[in-house]
Image (cartoon, rainbow, N blue to C red; front, side, top):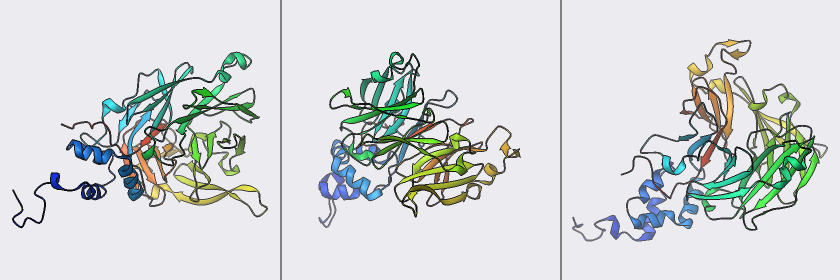
Length: 382
């Protein structure tokens, strides 16, 4: 039907691109809102997929939504979408390859996986379907490490210097591989532009590398070690060193001590004992020496549903073990994910909002995948 006055377009097809873009910018930052809107027609799809639009949408909404979670556990699904069909990402597009590939981490739209033999890495972009295979660094071969299989970890990041996942779909990438052997830590870097591993650096280390993923703070990658230390690798200088955790965290179960970004953007640490969460920041002290400062203490059971904190404790632990555990976090946000006997909750530290995100009978490390989904399809879509 035509507008009787002739002043307004009769349909959205008559709206100019600039006006449509302004309308699309008002859409909520829901995991599948953009992709579902883009499926209306080819014109809308092209407008929403445009990199400049995605960048503006990211600037406007600040936070990237959590699209899904990945896990290496055999007790919970390896792929857990956020939401229910049709308001979730496509299972076909985001399902992990066979169980022989294990997730090491997610960053800048990319997922890094390793083969069961640790002889090959896979850099996968679920948004585009791109998969690139990288041979393991020869430096970690047991033949060059006194016949010992080194404890290893690796991480991926955008080589173009982007700070979020909105601009990294076609950028070159870097892989940093760290491993420990005979009380030494080693680090080497792979560039997708040169398709080669670069110079390795080594330093004495008090402990072996842990299996949990790295955290990127500024231009420094941090990994937890198994004995209350943190391994740091500076991307620019290629300097490798370790940092001791605060003394007050030494008695805390090590998987409840997590590296994170502090409120000021520097290195931080979260330590969880029962429902008591302590947030630490690495700062310059009065003598000009870097030190840990306790910045905040939060009693989490005050913000969780009553049935979560009412689990009976025996010797300060729930009947089946620790009542809560930190499973993962989003390194550029204030959100972390916590397992309880009532399910997994997302906790936002600034607002202290706690939302249940999925059920899980056992705690297992999870890898949140964030971004604005503008390519592909969604489950349940016609």
